[in-house]
Image (cartoon, rainbow, N blue to C red; front, side, top):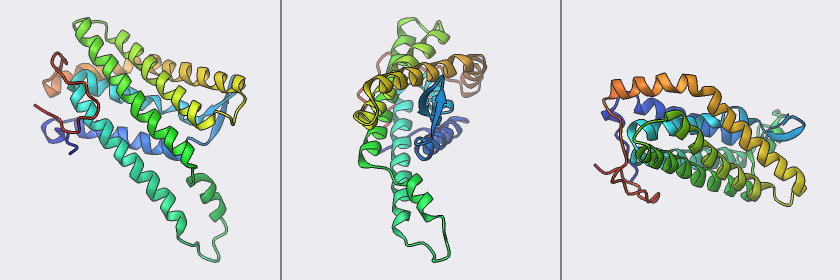
Length: 230
């Protein structure tokens, strides 16, 4: 059973909704390729890092267990959204509707790409939250900027390697694939760094308003626990 204490906290529901929104948008726009320094990367490079920023805030303020519940909830919504988007293609279009081919091109994804997206999201998000929660305990809550950046480097790195490795291996030449992974990884991390001046006051405000600054001293970090305890 998936559960978060959304009703208990003022902003937890908002953060959950934003996380799900950005994940759904990324699902439907990931196939659009842009050029960064001549290297092709997904346009989601520009806003997918916001999901990691939200995950960092969730873990830092509310703790790993809350973040874990929201990761699973977001993944469930992501799978449902992708399934509905693909399923609607089974309904025949009106005879006068001429743009059906474009919808098929955008909303139909191969099983390989869909699998890559789910694996990358699941493993990357948990690596990110685990790293941040552990670092917070190790450095006793100091150096917020450092654990935000390090957790993003780990989480985004795992996410990028899995997605590009599974979805595009054998499609792109190995040299170009490696360049895409590196540019995507570095770009996503830079977004986190640029957002730090905004992240600090948000985290401080949430801790004050919500009355919580959770430390995961005795947390069970098993990612496959679906119920928030305590």
